[in-house]
Length: 363
Image (tube, rainbow, N blue to C red):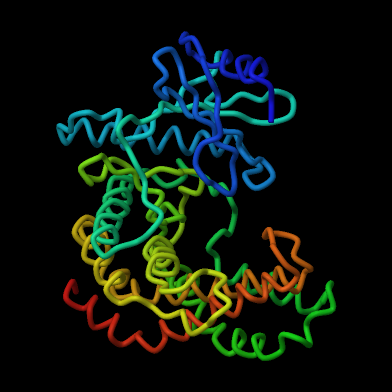
Protein backbone atom coordinates (compact mmCIF):
# COMPACT_ATOMS: atom_id res chain seq x y z
CA UNK A 1 0.00 0.00 0.00
CA UNK A 2 1.32 3.43 -0.91
CA UNK A 3 1.66 6.31 1.53
CA UNK A 4 -0.83 9.17 1.59
CA UNK A 5 1.78 11.41 -0.01
CA UNK A 6 2.20 8.98 -2.88
CA UNK A 7 -1.55 8.81 -3.37
CA UNK A 8 -1.76 12.59 -3.34
CA UNK A 9 0.88 12.73 -6.04
CA UNK A 10 -1.08 10.27 -8.19
CA UNK A 11 -4.35 12.13 -7.66
CA UNK A 12 -2.56 15.38 -8.45
CA UNK A 13 -1.96 14.12 -11.97
CA UNK A 14 -5.68 14.27 -12.62
CA UNK A 15 -7.76 17.41 -12.88
CA UNK A 16 -8.83 17.57 -9.25
CA UNK A 17 -8.60 20.63 -7.06
CA UNK A 18 -10.24 19.22 -3.94
CA UNK A 19 -8.43 18.87 -0.66
CA UNK A 20 -7.94 15.14 -0.11
CA UNK A 21 -8.63 13.93 3.41
CA UNK A 22 -8.36 10.16 3.06
CA UNK A 23 -7.72 7.36 0.58
CA UNK A 24 -9.23 4.06 1.73
CA UNK A 25 -9.71 0.54 0.29
CA UNK A 26 -13.10 0.16 -1.36
CA UNK A 27 -15.17 -2.75 -2.63
CA UNK A 28 -14.14 -6.36 -3.12
CA UNK A 29 -12.92 -6.55 -6.71
CA UNK A 30 -10.54 -9.37 -7.60
CA UNK A 31 -8.66 -7.82 -10.51
CA UNK A 32 -7.90 -4.14 -9.86
CA UNK A 33 -7.09 -2.40 -6.57
CA UNK A 34 -9.90 0.04 -5.83
CA UNK A 35 -9.80 2.93 -3.36
CA UNK A 36 -12.30 5.53 -2.20
CA UNK A 37 -11.09 9.13 -2.09
CA UNK A 38 -12.67 11.37 0.54
CA UNK A 39 -12.44 15.15 0.31
CA UNK A 40 -13.43 18.02 2.60
CA UNK A 41 -16.80 17.27 4.08
CA UNK A 42 -15.90 13.62 4.53
CA UNK A 43 -18.08 12.29 1.72
CA UNK A 44 -16.59 10.06 -0.99
CA UNK A 45 -15.80 12.11 -4.08
CA UNK A 46 -13.69 9.90 -6.33
CA UNK A 47 -12.78 6.29 -6.97
CA UNK A 48 -9.09 5.64 -7.58
CA UNK A 49 -8.09 2.37 -9.23
CA UNK A 50 -4.80 0.70 -9.92
CA UNK A 51 -5.29 -1.18 -13.19
CA UNK A 52 -4.02 -4.74 -13.26
CA UNK A 53 -1.83 -4.41 -16.36
CA UNK A 54 -0.81 -8.05 -16.16
CA UNK A 55 -4.35 -8.97 -17.21
CA UNK A 56 -5.17 -5.82 -19.20
CA UNK A 57 -1.87 -5.58 -21.02
CA UNK A 58 -2.90 -2.78 -23.38
CA UNK A 59 -3.96 -0.05 -20.94
CA UNK A 60 -4.19 2.55 -23.68
CA UNK A 61 -6.76 0.42 -25.54
CA UNK A 62 -8.56 -0.39 -22.29
CA UNK A 63 -9.08 3.25 -21.38
CA UNK A 64 -9.86 4.23 -24.96
CA UNK A 65 -12.62 1.58 -24.95
CA UNK A 66 -14.04 2.83 -21.66
CA UNK A 67 -13.96 6.46 -22.79
CA UNK A 68 -15.75 5.55 -26.05
CA UNK A 69 -18.37 3.49 -24.20
CA UNK A 70 -19.13 6.05 -21.49
CA UNK A 71 -19.26 8.89 -24.03
CA UNK A 72 -21.64 6.91 -26.24
CA UNK A 73 -23.91 6.04 -23.32
CA UNK A 74 -23.89 9.63 -22.07
CA UNK A 75 -25.00 10.83 -25.52
CA UNK A 76 -27.80 8.24 -25.57
CA UNK A 77 -29.00 9.36 -22.13
CA UNK A 78 -29.04 12.99 -23.30
CA UNK A 79 -31.07 12.00 -26.39
CA UNK A 80 -33.57 10.22 -24.12
CA UNK A 81 -33.95 13.34 -22.01
CA UNK A 82 -32.69 11.56 -18.89
CA UNK A 83 -32.06 13.57 -15.73
CA UNK A 84 -29.19 13.19 -13.25
CA UNK A 85 -26.96 11.74 -15.96
CA UNK A 86 -23.76 11.85 -13.86
CA UNK A 87 -25.30 9.11 -11.70
CA UNK A 88 -26.34 7.00 -14.70
CA UNK A 89 -22.98 6.58 -16.39
CA UNK A 90 -19.43 6.44 -15.04
CA UNK A 91 -17.37 9.61 -15.45
CA UNK A 92 -13.60 9.17 -15.74
CA UNK A 93 -11.25 12.13 -15.34
CA UNK A 94 -8.45 12.87 -17.78
CA UNK A 95 -4.91 13.20 -16.48
CA UNK A 96 -2.92 16.35 -17.17
CA UNK A 97 -1.57 14.86 -20.40
CA UNK A 98 -5.11 14.23 -21.66
CA UNK A 99 -4.99 10.45 -21.25
CA UNK A 100 -7.55 8.71 -19.08
CA UNK A 101 -4.85 7.03 -17.00
CA UNK A 102 -1.55 7.85 -15.37
CA UNK A 103 1.58 5.67 -15.22
CA UNK A 104 3.76 6.28 -12.20
CA UNK A 105 6.66 4.20 -13.47
CA UNK A 106 5.33 1.11 -11.76
CA UNK A 107 1.53 0.99 -12.01
CA UNK A 108 -1.30 2.41 -14.08
CA UNK A 109 -3.96 4.50 -12.33
CA UNK A 110 -7.35 5.97 -13.23
CA UNK A 111 -9.89 8.13 -11.44
CA UNK A 112 -13.66 8.36 -11.81
CA UNK A 113 -16.35 10.30 -9.99
CA UNK A 114 -17.94 8.52 -7.04
CA UNK A 115 -21.69 8.07 -7.61
CA UNK A 116 -23.47 9.25 -4.44
CA UNK A 117 -26.47 7.51 -2.86
CA UNK A 118 -25.70 4.31 -4.75
CA UNK A 119 -25.34 0.70 -3.74
CA UNK A 120 -24.65 -2.72 -5.21
CA UNK A 121 -25.87 -6.16 -4.17
CA UNK A 122 -23.91 -9.35 -3.64
CA UNK A 123 -26.84 -11.73 -3.18
CA UNK A 124 -29.39 -12.49 -5.86
CA UNK A 125 -33.20 -12.47 -5.77
CA UNK A 126 -35.69 -12.84 -8.64
CA UNK A 127 -36.43 -9.10 -8.49
CA UNK A 128 -32.73 -8.20 -8.63
CA UNK A 129 -32.30 -10.68 -11.48
CA UNK A 130 -35.09 -8.94 -13.40
CA UNK A 131 -33.55 -5.51 -12.76
CA UNK A 132 -30.08 -6.74 -13.72
CA UNK A 133 -31.47 -8.22 -16.93
CA UNK A 134 -33.04 -4.87 -17.83
CA UNK A 135 -29.80 -3.05 -16.99
CA UNK A 136 -27.49 -5.25 -19.05
CA UNK A 137 -29.98 -5.45 -21.93
CA UNK A 138 -30.25 -1.65 -21.98
CA UNK A 139 -26.46 -1.37 -21.75
CA UNK A 140 -26.06 -3.56 -24.85
CA UNK A 141 -28.89 -1.79 -26.62
CA UNK A 142 -27.29 1.63 -26.17
CA UNK A 143 -24.00 0.30 -27.55
CA UNK A 144 -25.53 -1.66 -30.45
CA UNK A 145 -24.77 1.10 -32.96
CA UNK A 146 -21.12 1.71 -32.06
CA UNK A 147 -19.30 1.31 -35.41
CA UNK A 148 -17.21 -1.80 -35.89
CA UNK A 149 -13.55 -1.22 -35.11
CA UNK A 150 -14.07 1.49 -32.48
CA UNK A 151 -13.52 -0.92 -29.58
CA UNK A 152 -10.69 -3.42 -29.29
CA UNK A 153 -10.55 -6.71 -27.39
CA UNK A 154 -9.10 -5.86 -23.99
CA UNK A 155 -8.55 -9.58 -23.36
CA UNK A 156 -8.19 -11.24 -26.78
CA UNK A 157 -10.28 -14.41 -27.27
CA UNK A 158 -11.82 -13.96 -23.81
CA UNK A 159 -15.04 -15.84 -24.64
CA UNK A 160 -13.77 -17.68 -27.72
CA UNK A 161 -14.62 -21.34 -27.08
CA UNK A 162 -12.37 -22.69 -29.82
CA UNK A 163 -9.45 -20.82 -28.30
CA UNK A 164 -10.23 -22.09 -24.78
CA UNK A 165 -10.41 -25.67 -26.07
CA UNK A 166 -7.06 -25.26 -27.80
CA UNK A 167 -5.59 -24.11 -24.48
CA UNK A 168 -7.12 -27.22 -22.88
CA UNK A 169 -5.63 -29.53 -25.52
CA UNK A 170 -2.24 -27.87 -25.02
CA UNK A 171 -2.49 -28.37 -21.26
CA UNK A 172 -3.37 -32.05 -21.75
CA UNK A 173 -0.44 -32.52 -24.12
CA UNK A 174 2.08 -30.80 -21.88
CA UNK A 175 0.72 -32.27 -18.63
CA UNK A 176 2.94 -29.80 -16.76
CA UNK A 177 1.71 -30.76 -13.28
CA UNK A 178 1.37 -34.48 -14.00
CA UNK A 179 -2.37 -34.41 -13.38
CA UNK A 180 -3.80 -35.56 -16.72
CA UNK A 181 -4.46 -39.17 -15.66
CA UNK A 182 -6.24 -37.98 -12.52
CA UNK A 183 -8.82 -36.00 -14.50
CA UNK A 184 -9.49 -38.45 -17.34
CA UNK A 185 -13.21 -38.69 -16.50
CA UNK A 186 -13.67 -34.93 -16.68
CA UNK A 187 -11.54 -34.79 -19.82
CA UNK A 188 -13.82 -37.29 -21.53
CA UNK A 189 -16.91 -35.28 -20.54
CA UNK A 190 -15.37 -32.08 -21.91
CA UNK A 191 -14.24 -33.60 -25.19
CA UNK A 192 -17.54 -35.28 -26.00
CA UNK A 193 -19.29 -31.88 -25.77
CA UNK A 194 -16.62 -29.89 -27.63
CA UNK A 195 -18.30 -29.84 -31.05
CA UNK A 196 -21.64 -28.67 -29.68
CA UNK A 197 -19.93 -25.92 -27.70
CA UNK A 198 -18.28 -24.20 -30.67
CA UNK A 199 -21.54 -23.25 -32.38
CA UNK A 200 -21.09 -19.47 -32.10
CA UNK A 201 -17.71 -19.44 -33.86
CA UNK A 202 -19.09 -21.68 -36.63
CA UNK A 203 -22.17 -19.48 -37.11
CA UNK A 204 -19.97 -16.38 -37.19
CA UNK A 205 -17.82 -17.82 -39.97
CA UNK A 206 -21.00 -18.66 -41.89
CA UNK A 207 -22.19 -15.05 -41.56
CA UNK A 208 -25.21 -16.03 -39.46
CA UNK A 209 -24.09 -14.53 -36.15
CA UNK A 210 -22.60 -11.07 -35.78
CA UNK A 211 -20.39 -9.60 -33.11
CA UNK A 212 -21.93 -7.23 -30.59
CA UNK A 213 -20.55 -5.01 -27.84
CA UNK A 214 -20.83 -7.01 -24.61
CA UNK A 215 -20.09 -6.34 -20.96
CA UNK A 216 -18.63 -9.85 -20.45
CA UNK A 217 -18.89 -9.79 -16.64
CA UNK A 218 -22.63 -9.67 -15.97
CA UNK A 219 -22.77 -10.20 -12.23
CA UNK A 220 -25.47 -8.48 -10.20
CA UNK A 221 -22.79 -6.59 -8.23
CA UNK A 222 -21.80 -4.84 -11.45
CA UNK A 223 -25.09 -2.92 -11.43
CA UNK A 224 -25.48 0.16 -9.22
CA UNK A 225 -28.88 0.90 -7.69
CA UNK A 226 -30.18 4.01 -5.95
CA UNK A 227 -31.55 3.87 -2.43
CA UNK A 228 -35.07 3.20 -3.76
CA UNK A 229 -33.95 0.12 -5.68
CA UNK A 230 -33.90 1.71 -9.14
CA UNK A 231 -31.06 0.91 -11.52
CA UNK A 232 -28.55 3.70 -11.93
CA UNK A 233 -25.88 2.24 -14.19
CA UNK A 234 -23.68 -0.67 -15.13
CA UNK A 235 -20.13 -0.54 -13.77
CA UNK A 236 -16.82 -2.46 -14.11
CA UNK A 237 -16.29 -1.74 -17.79
CA UNK A 238 -12.85 -3.31 -18.30
CA UNK A 239 -14.16 -6.27 -20.30
CA UNK A 240 -16.58 -4.30 -22.49
CA UNK A 241 -15.56 -5.37 -25.99
CA UNK A 242 -16.77 -6.99 -29.20
CA UNK A 243 -18.02 -10.57 -28.92
CA UNK A 244 -21.15 -12.65 -29.16
CA UNK A 245 -24.40 -11.71 -27.46
CA UNK A 246 -24.51 -15.09 -25.70
CA UNK A 247 -21.72 -13.96 -23.38
CA UNK A 248 -23.76 -11.57 -21.28
CA UNK A 249 -26.85 -13.65 -20.61
CA UNK A 250 -24.69 -16.77 -20.39
CA UNK A 251 -22.39 -15.43 -17.71
CA UNK A 252 -25.32 -14.21 -15.62
CA UNK A 253 -26.97 -17.63 -15.79
CA UNK A 254 -23.66 -19.22 -14.80
CA UNK A 255 -23.12 -16.96 -11.79
CA UNK A 256 -26.55 -15.68 -10.75
CA UNK A 257 -28.75 -18.71 -11.42
CA UNK A 258 -26.48 -21.20 -9.63
CA UNK A 259 -28.03 -22.39 -6.36
CA UNK A 260 -24.56 -23.27 -5.07
CA UNK A 261 -21.17 -21.59 -4.98
CA UNK A 262 -18.79 -21.48 -7.92
CA UNK A 263 -16.44 -23.76 -5.97
CA UNK A 264 -19.02 -25.59 -3.84
CA UNK A 265 -17.61 -28.71 -2.20
CA UNK A 266 -21.11 -30.20 -1.90
CA UNK A 267 -22.28 -30.85 -5.45
CA UNK A 268 -25.79 -31.53 -4.17
CA UNK A 269 -26.07 -27.77 -3.52
CA UNK A 270 -25.67 -26.99 -7.20
CA UNK A 271 -28.46 -26.66 -9.75
CA UNK A 272 -29.94 -23.98 -12.00
CA UNK A 273 -32.49 -21.73 -10.32
CA UNK A 274 -35.16 -21.44 -12.97
CA UNK A 275 -36.90 -18.49 -11.31
CA UNK A 276 -33.66 -16.50 -11.46
CA UNK A 277 -33.18 -17.43 -15.12
CA UNK A 278 -36.75 -16.50 -16.06
CA UNK A 279 -36.58 -13.19 -14.17
CA UNK A 280 -33.30 -12.21 -15.84
CA UNK A 281 -34.56 -13.26 -19.27
CA UNK A 282 -37.76 -11.19 -18.85
CA UNK A 283 -35.80 -8.09 -17.88
CA UNK A 284 -33.18 -8.62 -20.55
CA UNK A 285 -35.69 -9.09 -23.34
CA UNK A 286 -37.59 -5.95 -22.31
CA UNK A 287 -34.57 -3.84 -23.23
CA UNK A 288 -32.53 -5.97 -25.64
CA UNK A 289 -35.17 -7.42 -27.97
CA UNK A 290 -35.04 -4.36 -30.24
CA UNK A 291 -31.62 -5.26 -31.65
CA UNK A 292 -31.49 -9.07 -31.29
CA UNK A 293 -32.03 -11.35 -34.27
CA UNK A 294 -34.35 -14.39 -34.01
CA UNK A 295 -31.28 -16.66 -34.10
CA UNK A 296 -29.67 -14.79 -31.19
CA UNK A 297 -32.88 -14.99 -29.17
CA UNK A 298 -33.22 -18.71 -29.76
CA UNK A 299 -29.62 -19.28 -28.61
CA UNK A 300 -29.88 -17.33 -25.34
CA UNK A 301 -30.46 -20.37 -23.09
CA UNK A 302 -27.60 -22.14 -24.88
CA UNK A 303 -25.44 -19.21 -23.76
CA UNK A 304 -25.79 -20.37 -20.16
CA UNK A 305 -24.54 -23.84 -21.05
CA UNK A 306 -21.77 -22.41 -23.19
CA UNK A 307 -20.35 -20.06 -20.54
CA UNK A 308 -20.60 -22.73 -17.84
CA UNK A 309 -18.84 -25.25 -20.09
CA UNK A 310 -16.20 -22.63 -20.91
CA UNK A 311 -15.50 -21.99 -17.24
CA UNK A 312 -15.33 -25.73 -16.58
CA UNK A 313 -12.68 -25.96 -19.30
CA UNK A 314 -10.75 -22.96 -17.99
CA UNK A 315 -10.63 -24.24 -14.40
CA UNK A 316 -9.49 -27.69 -15.51
CA UNK A 317 -6.92 -26.20 -17.88
CA UNK A 318 -5.44 -24.24 -14.99
CA UNK A 319 -5.41 -27.35 -12.80
CA UNK A 320 -3.53 -29.25 -15.51
CA UNK A 321 -1.05 -26.38 -15.86
CA UNK A 322 -0.30 -26.33 -12.12
CA UNK A 323 -2.59 -23.48 -11.02
CA UNK A 324 -0.81 -20.67 -12.82
CA UNK A 325 -3.79 -18.35 -13.50
CA UNK A 326 -6.49 -18.46 -10.83
CA UNK A 327 -5.71 -17.82 -7.18
CA UNK A 328 -6.24 -20.99 -5.16
CA UNK A 329 -6.83 -21.58 -1.44
CA UNK A 330 -5.78 -25.24 -1.41
CA UNK A 331 -4.02 -27.62 -3.86
CA UNK A 332 -7.25 -29.09 -5.26
CA UNK A 333 -9.14 -25.80 -5.51
CA UNK A 334 -9.22 -25.62 -9.31
CA UNK A 335 -10.34 -29.26 -9.50
CA UNK A 336 -13.09 -28.49 -6.99
CA UNK A 337 -14.15 -25.52 -9.10
CA UNK A 338 -14.16 -27.72 -12.19
CA UNK A 339 -16.41 -30.31 -10.55
CA UNK A 340 -18.79 -27.60 -9.33
CA UNK A 341 -19.05 -25.97 -12.76
CA UNK A 342 -19.56 -29.31 -14.43
CA UNK A 343 -22.38 -30.11 -12.01
CA UNK A 344 -24.07 -26.82 -12.96
CA UNK A 345 -23.58 -27.64 -16.63
CA UNK A 346 -25.38 -30.96 -16.18
CA UNK A 347 -28.26 -29.19 -14.43
CA UNK A 348 -28.48 -26.69 -17.28
CA UNK A 349 -28.54 -29.55 -19.77
CA UNK A 350 -31.39 -31.18 -17.83
CA UNK A 351 -33.38 -27.93 -17.96
CA UNK A 352 -32.46 -27.02 -21.55
CA UNK A 353 -35.87 -27.82 -23.05
CA UNK A 354 -37.69 -25.83 -20.36
CA UNK A 355 -35.39 -22.84 -20.88
CA UNK A 356 -35.79 -23.02 -24.65
CA UNK A 357 -39.57 -23.12 -24.30
CA UNK A 358 -39.52 -20.06 -22.05
CA UNK A 359 -37.51 -18.03 -24.59
CA UNK A 360 -39.80 -18.99 -27.49
CA UNK A 361 -42.38 -16.42 -26.41
CA UNK A 362 -40.11 -13.69 -27.83
CA UNK A 363 -39.67 -15.37 -31.22
